[in-house]
Image (cartoon, rainbow, N blue to C red):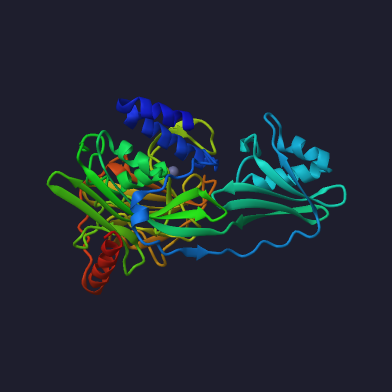
Length: 426
Ligand SMILES: [Zn+2]
């Protein structure tokens, strides 16, 4: 990853192609639950941040981990070419132990995907391993422990994180990518910025020197290691080009749908929403990719959002329910029929909205179901597809605007929220 970044700075004209390579590599790695670069370079201090009063901190203190009896702690590092079984063998692990441990870890990360250099903290009892703890994802560890002499258990340990609000701005001199680099922010931020504006701006063609951007966003970090950071949410984003200014405000409407609205409270999305899910991280883009379960390369006909089971799924646009079904690959899924031959599909659902049935009319943003892990799915996520006739199209490529406009009390609440956001960047 670092090497690619160096290449990027040497080849300005290739930025966009390489950036998309980096982005797809990141997405692919996140599919495998592997951190592409566990220790990113420390962030440079930003002038904007120094000029502003310190942002309020939201502290998210998780439940403390169960104390680990009186085991002898020992750290081991997985060596290149070494299997988990071989690493654990000197610590009195039986075949049965290894079998159980591998099976328990597998839904989180396949044992053969654990990289050399990964550190494991072992708790050693009398002659054998009683517990194993290791970093899994941002601010998450996996903890395996011997529950009874013959039975292992696994749990996810949430490490304490803090969330801070940050504001960055810049002017494009060569490319938008170059204008982001000085802030030392993650690629996710640029990806999110472009995705959110994707129905309004063609970033490949329409960005010119002199254009400027502003972003107010929330970032999560680990107080014990502030270099470990994760973009949480964009709150305000702006793009100024010659005589136009695009401004989007993140807002949660009365139905609980989180989305971006323009300055007048009009839903800033296409007539088929890009993100028809309450919360969730875009974890896989549209296009050719290696299937995480089937292994071979195939076309990914939609986009995926990783989200907890039970997260609300919304109708992407006005339409009629044409299918509610369960099958082997899509699991529980819904198909909506929209205007002009467009259809949307929502797969791997845990369940459907109460009383929803074929023939029902739905409006953009109505709750139709809940995120699940049914069918060919290895982690809770929404697989979202847009079809025109029988052809799958990239949901992020749809330009036709939504007609949804906040009304009445919801609009008044939005206006108050809008003023608060603008006050934060003054
Ligand atoms: Zn998918």
